[in-house]
Length: 396
Ligand code: UD1
Image (cartoon, rainbow, N blue to C red):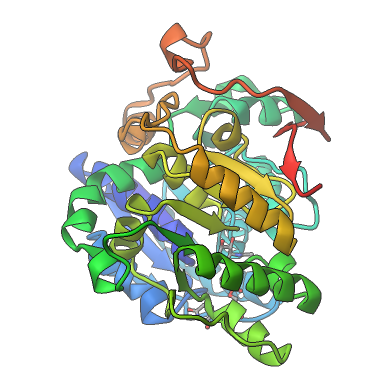
């Protein structure tokens, strides 16, 4: 059996790593295509090295550009590879432009598509990831769900249950595999924040960094947060560019550590030891929930509501005072118990490989009692455009 995986951006790589290992273990010919959407060493090669992902068989070199340019370039350069290799399945990961572009190419060539991390919905149609997710799911025959709520979204869109496989969260496979190595790096000491509580901050979503006023509020909040505790802030290239073009300045102060984007292990080591994470990333919401680290997600909606209902995540609007007040509350509420989320058990990739290779099914039967952790916060929810969201967004 020949499976072709297409990845392009940082969050895709973490999801590919455990799936590659499980497929290869079963004798699958696994061809990896890197679109080149991310290309800096710290955004790409570092992940392949640290996560033991083989060097890609093909590199499309598309680089940066507008959404249309990026999507079109992947489509044009990928098509001939799919035609030549005639894979049995094209596997795609997450919600990047590379994901959608590859789904379009494969589906139109009538090659089966599998989507890892299917069914995530924020209900926010201004988000490129939402558009990419909805369309990729629509074009996919095998939908690999990270959490039970994903099935509700897919069912609401008319996707038949036979296509859904509740396999769990592959990001947690990677995290569990890498955590001992990450802790051994002692990243806190390496970045000068050992011995006292510290926060880790990441920002890159267009909604937070493209608008000058919003970005200014957030940079101000980060700088003030740095007066209370040390702050490690690996700055995404997009954010650095926007700070420059908007004529703003990076947050300053003695306890602020501004860094280039970090490798997976360094970042995981830092996050695992953090008192608080402030972010707009998708993956960090999952990772902090698994690790039991309080997380503030600077967005008005999330495609990962389970991290709010069962995990450590809270949403906060991009306003300085709202972020600071939410940070104070989050620091005070840290629980010693880690949340337990159903099928976030380090075996999601194994289940995916069993579906692909052995035709197994992982159905959404009734939730076992053990899936609802004792004492887990069962916050009430509301529905927005068919999407279950936590009731509270701080700062609203
Ligand atoms: C992309 C994904 C997003 C994911 C994020 C993780 C889409 C629509 N967005 O957003 O889902 O959360 O990756 O980082 O696919 N740049 C560099 N070096 C690089 C890569 C990018 O300097 O290696 C700069 C370029 O100026 C580029 C900008 O960052 O224009 C944005 O990169 P892009 O891949 O378009 O989107 P991200 O914001 O990274």
